[in-house]
Amino acid sequence: MAIAIVMPRLGWTMEQGRLVEWLKKDGDAVQAGDVLLTVESDKTINEVESFDSGILRIPPDSPPPDTVMPVGTLLAYIVQPGEVAPFEQPDARQESAISVTATADTQVAAGMPRESASGPTVSTRRRGPRISPRARRVAAELGVDWNAVNGSGRTGRIIERDVRAAARLTATASPAPVLAAGEARPVTPIRRIIAQRMAESAQTAAAVTLTTEADATELVVLRDKIKASLTSRERSVPTYTDLMVKLTAVALVEHPMLNATWRGDEIVVHAQVHIGVAVDTDAGLLVPVIRDAAARSLQQIAAESTGLAEKARTRALKLDETQGGTFTITNLGMYGIDAFTPLINLPQCAILGVGRIVSKPAVHGGQVVPRAMMTLSLTFDHRVVDGGPAARFLSTVREYVEQPYLWLTR
Image 1 (tube, rainbow, N blue to C red):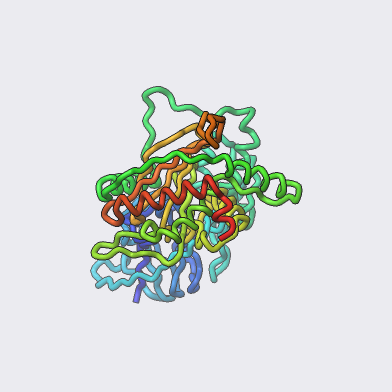
Image 2 (image 1 turned 60 degrees about the vertical axis):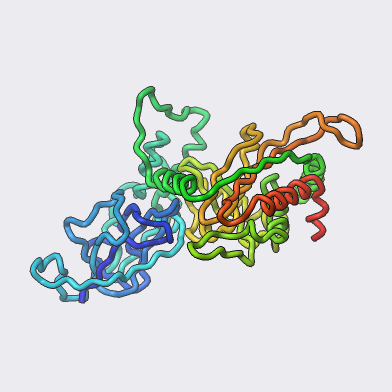
């Protein structure tokens, strides 16, 4: 019986996906576990494997690469040797079953074609540089001549990170292209997903924002001391965002109702704190997740956040690295922003916005002196938690910013 391959659902919010490319071609022999194609879902590139062995048959009217389609759209079949594909028998009854799964691999892995049971695919025998469709589009956007780029993928294939690396090398000589006045830009799948989620958040959650100002002078002193100690040892220095992740995670353990999600008829209070950190990328806002942040050391958080941020910017995040967050932190301080109203990352019930640290006159020890001040903005879902618990949580976060030794000793 022919086994249908369809656009898989790779996340609980996924309604459509984009076929990036086929890594097997029509007529290739396929073994169970072989990667058939790559799919772009919720901000990640995923490899789609076959559960079954047989021959891949792609119908002539199958959606071509770079097509966005609903989940469940028929893409191809796997048939047994000697079996006629359903599309070659238009009057035959087509029995199908979904037999694909997605591995949360990166686009780098997706750019590494594997050999089929019958030998190399056609793409491995082409002359000249081989480049993935995504890398080709990025090259066009950045104005990079990919023919002069050395590929780092298997068999020398050019992948997106190769193009971006080449663009960085020539950035000083070649200014980035600027959209002309009145020029339209198509909505990308990622931009569409962001729009849908933000609209859902604004329309669904009973959002309330609390704002407070914290004296971050001691936090600045702490980071300066850490920086001086770790730099000489050639170890990664925690950023202010890393410090906020750690102290916020400790505060969430004390105020578990802010580490909860709304789930229809129930409110789920999570046993562990998984903090999503918003990262600004060329593709849009991505939110990789630091898991069990309360139990991790500051050095562990710094190392992981650095790796996740780099993956986000190079579109190399795995699917499971963007899912399962229970709380989100977004820091706009590096852009000179003091206070803002962040939108909740549903189904989470709260998000913390972090503003810049700026020297201001403040009363300290009965005198007006310059202090490093920081604005904190907490948006919470009033369906899940009331104003009192939310205010107490924000007060604890402010206390931990002002007295970081309280959470460092926990």
